Length: 76
Image 1 (cartoon, one colour):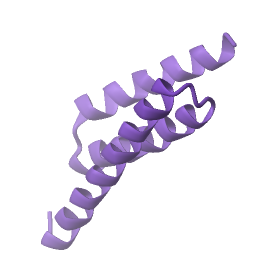
Image 2 (cartoon, one colour; image 1 turned 30 degrees about the vertical axis):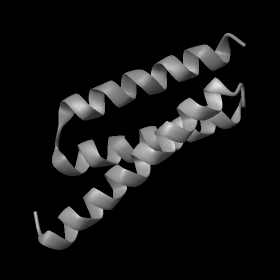
Image 3 (cartoon, rainbow, N blue to C red; image 1 turned 45 degrees about the horizontal axis):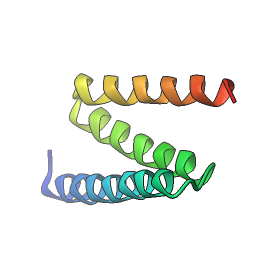
């Protein structure tokens, strides 16, 4: 992986992490559906990191999280 791509992935990881933390915060304050949108953005960011790294474990955990979110939203 080139240094340019590594730098971009590092930025993506941090942005996705901060957005997911914002999702946890929104959940704590009962800010729905904002929390779901934040989790979804963070989830997509981390899935992209897994894709770039070809890391199936990272991709798996975020696909499972997406499935859980969809199931949870359907139960509302």
